Image (tube, rainbow, N blue to C red):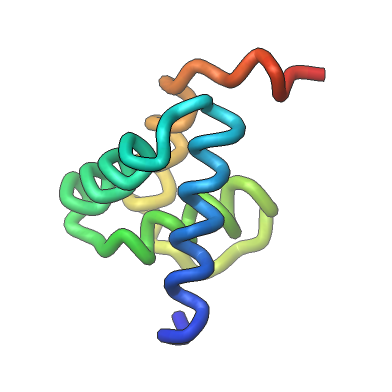
Length: 85
């Protein structure tokens, strides 16, 4: 991923976690870091999997084990009732 775009993708992933799953920005950063540590990837790789592959449905070339892990963790988070249709 382009070094210029990396902070934007991480910020977008943080926003997804804070708005859709009603976690604080600090907790979102903690989750992204923990997921990166657990998958032996970077926060940017985890954020890319979340934003592009999961949220937008656009294949980004994320490592399959990172994508599967993030998908599983997202399913475990309670959704924010304010974002329900």
